[in-house]
Image (cartoon, rainbow, N blue to C red):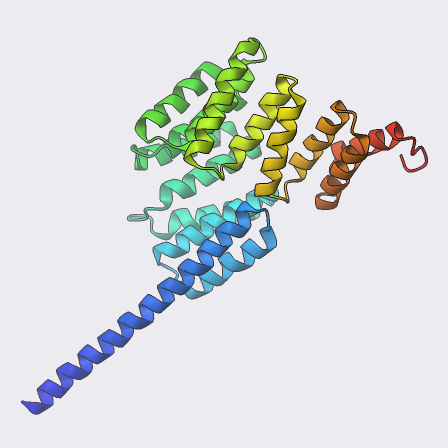
Amino acid sequence: MKNRTKAALLTLLLLGLAAVGYTFQYLKTEALYHDAEQAAHRGQYAKAEGLYQSSLAVWLPLHPGAAKAHIGLGYVFLRQGHFERAEEQFLAASNQWALVNHAKPQALAGLGYLYIKTGEFDAARDAFTQADTLNPKSFEGDVGLGYVAIQTGKLKDAEALFKRAQEKNPSPEALTGLGYTYVKQGQANPKIYDQATDAFQSALKMNPAAMDALVGLMHTAIKQKDWQAALRWAQQALDLNPNREDVYATLGHIYIKLKEYLNAEKAFTKSVDLNPQTVEAHSGMGFAQLKQGKVEEA
C-alpha cells in the first residue's frame, strides 16, 4: 500500500513539474512572439526575424504557436520583398495542422497578400476565398478579396466586400480597406475623399497603431492638396514605424510642395539610406538639392 502511495505521489510530482515546465516554455515563447510583433510593426525586420526564429526553436513543431510564428515570419519577408521565403512560411503555417489549424485562415490570407504583390490575382482570390470558407465569421477573407477588387479596378465590388467584412466583424483592417477604396473613387469625385478620411480615422479609433490607416490619411490629404495635414500624418506614421522608406520618400515630396527643400533633402536621404534601390527618392533628393543651389551634389 505504501509503495502504491509513493508511486502515486511521485507521478503527481512529475506531472506537476511537467506542467510547470510547459507553463515556463509557453510564457517564454509568448514573450518572444510579442517582442517579434513589436519589432515588425516598427520595421525592425532583422530583429523581428531573429525573435520569430527563436520562438520556433522553443515550440514543438506541431504546436499552434509555431504556426503563428511562421505567419509572422511570412509577413516580415513579404514586407522586405522576399517573396519566395514569405511563401515558404505561409505554407508551413497553413500545412502544419491541416485538420485543426486555427491559424490556417490567417496563413491563407498571408498567401493572398503575397499573390497580390506578385500580381497573381486569381491565386490571391482563391487563397482569400479559402480563408473565408474556413472561417466565415472572420473579416480576413472579405478584406483580402476587397484588396484584390481594388487592384483589378472593381471599386464597387471592393466597397461592398469591405462593408460586408465590417458587418461580420468590425475591424480597423476593414475600415482601412474601405478608406483606400474611397481614395480610388475620389479620383472621379473629389467629394468622396472626405469619406476616405472618415474611414481611416475610424480605423485609428479602433487601433491607434494602424499604420496603413495613417498612411492612407497622408495620401488622402495629398489628393486634397492639404500639405500641412499630409505632413502631420506622415510624421505620425514615421513615429509609429521609423523604417518606412516609402513614407520618407512621400514626406520628401510634401516638403517640396511646402518649399522646404532642406527638409525634403533630409527625408529623401533617409529613404535612400533605408533602401538604396529606390529611384524615386534618388530623383527627389537631386531635385531638392538643385532647389537649394547645390548643383554639384545634385
